[in-house]
Image 1 (cartoon, one colour):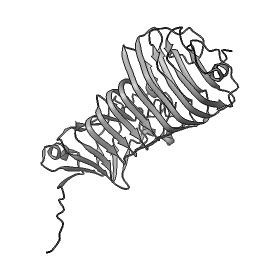
Image 2 (cartoon, rainbow, N blue to C red):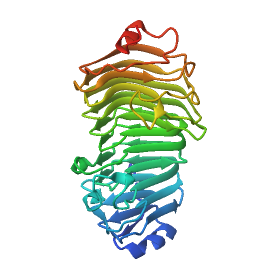
Image 3 (cartoon, rainbow, N blue to C red):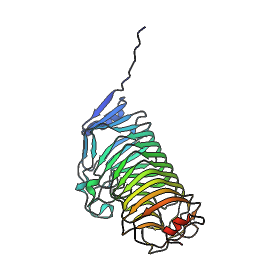
Image 4 (spheres, rainbow, N blue to C red):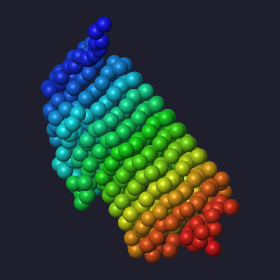
Length: 353
């Protein structure tokens, strides 16, 4: 008897001209390859409503024409989709054409980059470089795994602003893992959603790992950040809730986080956003329940504060804080609103004893 193996190879359609995209989406091919594509200025790379079971691959260098507009430059949606980069590929926003040191606050109108709306899907092995502003947004997603993604805006260190890395909103069961972000705003942020995980990632140059900013009656619950490094960033780990607004933060965990050379705040939880100083009182519209901060350690630069908690009385409840060892910051900020029963060493670091 002869043994043999049958290998089924899905057919692929290659897109190297912009006018081929719609036909590729309508075809019966299960693999769409975006190869060395030049996207016209001010036009969306529309990869929405992909057929279930599609694999979307990026090959070579994908670039975009220059125009001042709001974007996004790429939008991907569908169910049971695999989005992946082939070896050597690059999705290049060439963001220096927009960077002016003002980000979204003024100057040139800058487009956001990639937006995802995916269910039961995987995004893996992507290399994204030099986006004008926000890099990688996942909204209204369910059961999404993002793994081994490199978001590289190192070239924007002097003039890039608001280049948020992984932003997750209004989503459920999203995991971001084994990835790297070099940027100039939040490395990871979640302003609404549940069952979100940020695991084994490296954050460089931005604003650290953030929950919020919270408001608009949004809810964040069951969010975990574990086994991550935050390096040379403005903040380390942060929960920010907007002054005079309402929301809920519940069951958030920061565990096994290493901080290095943080510029301003190592651990920060505050209820007076957008301020990041104790210059005005926090408000009580966003309870923060069952927060866990464990094994967070590392260094803050001398001009910063190791820890700052600034909450209205009664906002915080059910916190568990242990093994927090953040040092180096010489700035002593007043703290308020820590819940009863909090670790005494943490209280001392926060200036409450």
